[in-house]
Image (cartoon, rainbow, N blue to C red; front, side, top):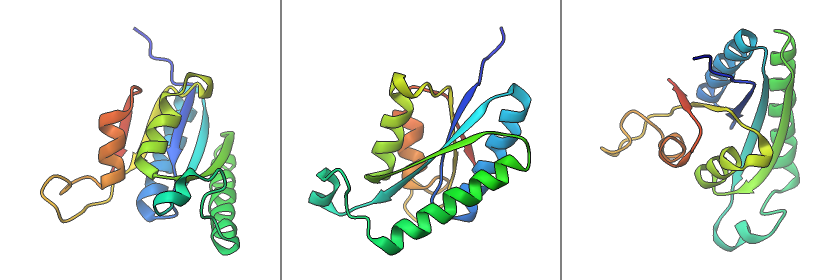
Length: 143
């Protein structure tokens, strides 16, 4: 059985762990002749998450744009097409929702893990743990 992995979703937050996830996604995309969609979800407090523009201020948007542009360059150097999207909301929920939405055509999620101190999340960060359990698509967690 041949598995088709044409469109890979990579959540990016600018951390070293998310960049390791991006590097793994680039490797997988090269093997499968696929593309990457980089998604940044800016965490917003409570009621602001409902607003379509959320709680993104100008400085935050500049930083997000820089991270996504850097990811595009990193992928292009390896011959991989990367499209990017930035939204605001609850990172775990919105990443899983984006991956599960048929119109986005995601075949796989590659996400960086970040260790936390609680027993449940000793090896995975809360976002990667949530996505791992709520995504209907295969999830590769990169440490």
